[in-house]
Every structure is written in structure tokens, then in C-alpha cells.
Amino acid sequence: MKKRRGYMVDNILTDEQLLFRLDRSIKECKLSQVYLNDVVDDYGKVKVAKLRFEFARHEYLNLLKEAKARGLKVAEENKRIANLLFN
Image (cartoon, rainbow, N blue to C red):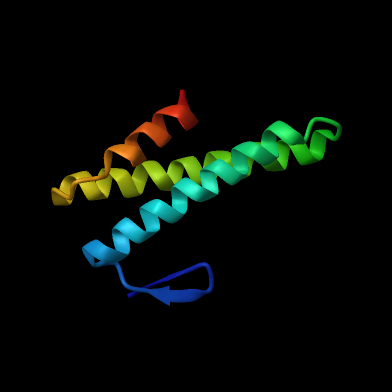
């Protein structure tokens, strides 16, 4: 186990947990992107929104890479959502 963000987590996730986190990270990306599009009046808020989106995107890509490495099939819907978000 390693310490991350103040709590202990296992290095190894089950396939089910990995897919759950992948879905959750897509939702975080969507929410971050919506917030980024809504915030235009304050430089600080825009900067925070960009960082939040980039972090969520980075986490999603890492989880997706792990899922592919394990040979898990990621739903086509998730791939389409990711293409819409990141392109």
C-alpha cells in the first residue's frame, strides 16, 4: 500500500474498480469542461478550471491506459465521449 492524498490505497485495483474509476473520471472531465466553458470573467477561476480539467484528463488517460494494458474492453460509448472531450 502507498499513501496518496492523505489516505492509504492499494496499488492494485480490481477490474471492476478500474472500470468504475474510468467512468467516474469521464464524468469529472465533463463537469470540469462545462465549468471551464462557463467561467470567463475571472482569471483565477479560469486558471483553476483549466488545471482541474487537465488533472481529470490526465487521470482518465492513465486509467484508460491501464484498462487497455489489462485487456479490458472499454465500451464504445466511453471512447466516443473521450473523443468529444479531448478533441
